Image (cartoon, rainbow, N blue to C red; front, side, top):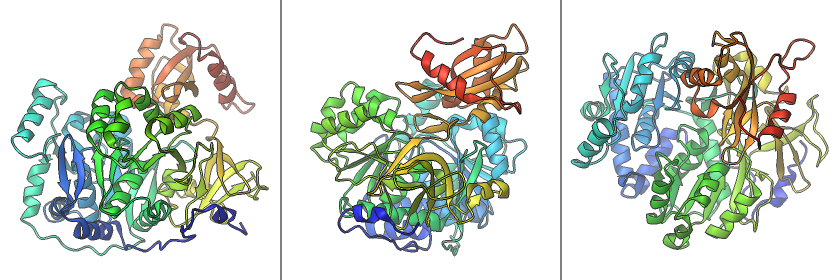
Length: 568
């Protein structure tokens, strides 16, 4: 790319480049933030709050425990299997301060999904909410995990509320299934042990690894994107430069409803707002809309992030109409990513909350933010915005040549936020980059004369369910484990609530196989958003001359029939 045509469209005062080494590491980011904002609230959950000073102390204690008690050294991998609770930032920053590499895990994974990720990453330890320990117990065989730290929901609340919450979760609501993991250590015990130990300082620089962030990438095979401290710091600085003076250090409150194990919330909410000294209000279960809306009504928040389905659900929720008045017009920034934003949702949001719903674009391999619309847009643009500072975007054809402005091709990215590659997968890494160093996103788009990027389509077979990518190959592999299945194909069909849901076409090996039995099978092997919502049995599936299943015709047919009665 010879000219960065988007720079002329930048907001006044936005720099074209950032200092990608403003911090040597995320450890330095945390330590400087805690020193600057010590008594400011950092994270709130279920009415309890940790200050930056408390976050500093607790994460220090956990880091000392990991080093001195568990004997973990720089570069070893630790998995974190937690929803949005106070324990997440403590475990995250404790692990990073100990020099470990964090492997974020979806708490709703099935045992086979969890086992695959733990085995591939080589994680030697894991922090898990006790609610999901029964899944971990089944997943541990065949992995390198030798240390397990468990925590209960209320563990970081003050007594006696801690005792009450943990009793209700376990004994009244019965949300903790029986589990037994030899040698498991309770988080509160770990913190107490760490408090008595010295923390050995670990030298960390931009090249050191921070995360193995798992994604299907551009091929659908689950793999760990290798994200360094430098990658993450760069994306934090790029995002902060884009925000400019809109948000003030030490004064902001962000609503964090997207899971922190997902890279969007990890960067845009947790890490960016630690730099800003902001308060993260953690929403553990955004599906509890009455509880979510009640939290919004009693919180004067200035920023919120989400995906289209989240904003749509809020707009339709009872009581949301009172949120703007209760908020005192405090909202400054609302950002949507992860999936396409529908115009009707964006327009309703702006009318309801008085600020635009600003759409951005990114992917795990870019830490994740690549593009974002200006925050001063008067209305919905239908574009995913301009490349962030120090970011290059090119639209390339199949031969790797740049297409003329306005024409479509594959969106490709270069910048300091782009991953090193995929963990232990050199061939996949090679396929992800061009010879000129462009990251191939697998997404189709175009760029206009002002530098605004428009996303035309996800990689043709990827199914995007509420911002989460479900890959047909992974779903089909799980379905094919059923002895009664001869062939299977998964496609995405439009859905009003989720954007898309999974439709499954199956050729039976066992004529007696039912849709209900297949749903039960999928529930054992696939996370909820990956499970088919519609199933249809076929005699044959469409194939190419070389025998590859053709998803296109099935997807087109499924979309036409989506408005009708359920399949299967």
